[in-house]
Image (cartoon, rainbow over all chains, first blue to last red; front, top):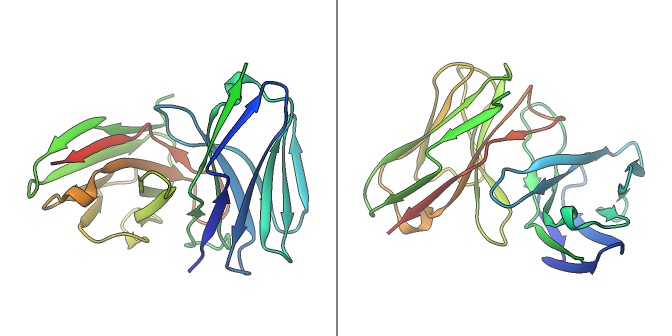
Length: 113
Length: 113
């Protein structure tokens, strides 16, 4: 089955700096890669996703890049703000009906004011 | 909008006791899921229901049973709780399986002594 590894497990940045979280996956058939944000005491919430027919996707201060050859994808957050502090999870699946997401281990991002 | 509602939010059990976690969604979604979240291990799928009337095992189904009571409700049962089942449990729903956003509840923290 699919295996997703996520690094780093914790990341501390100064407000206004950029943050990058990286994930690798094992199944070359995977072609759907979402990112979820989990705030303290809440369930995860989708913030951005990318499908394998594109290499990069942006939504305001967040962007995701995908390298299918190397089987890795990354989340980039620019101009970080204290409200970006949360746990972030990457995930992968083949996107086929009945195929479930496999999540990475999570990254705790701390943005210091 | 309530979204996905889980009960109870907290529960303490003794080894060998049984309990049921309840989940309901009001978004008319076809698919529902139960995940467990443990430190450093991300979210692991226990069971899922692709549509009303069907259930399937996920990555870590041992020690659990599920019931898709109707389109709205999906319950998770621990028949004989073990300390290894101490975790935070999340229910989620989505319009279908494959591509697409998962909508999570706020979680149920279970401690087994």
